[in-house]
Length: 130
Picture 1 (cartoon, rainbow, N blue to C red):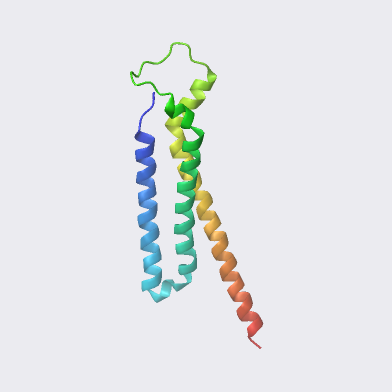
Picture 2 (picture 1 turned 90 degrees about the vertical axis):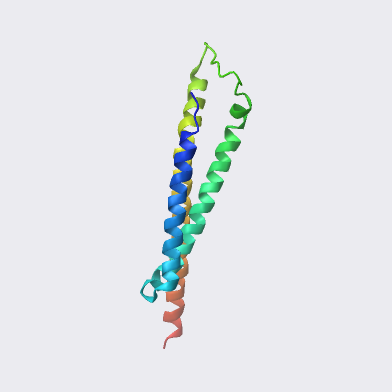
């Protein structure tokens, strides 16, 4: 019951995220009206990408035993238990869920770091002005 379609969809979604993030970051450097977006755009892109890679690495680490026990013949065993169903679900839908979760959590972390940097810069400007 395994297929490679979830990873195709996850990688396509990540490619779209990467392209849109790169365009947003580049446009914040090119257009002066979008200069306020610069600290958010590159952190959003960087930490979202890191979240994608780390979450999928964790998924591979968790499913390593399952991937090493896949039979070459493709014949499924007649006696399936609940653990087999959970593993099948994780193999089939895990990439979609984990990839999206990794990008979202990484992007939220990037937004938090950017907001902390921007608010800290405004606080420093307020203290410096008489």
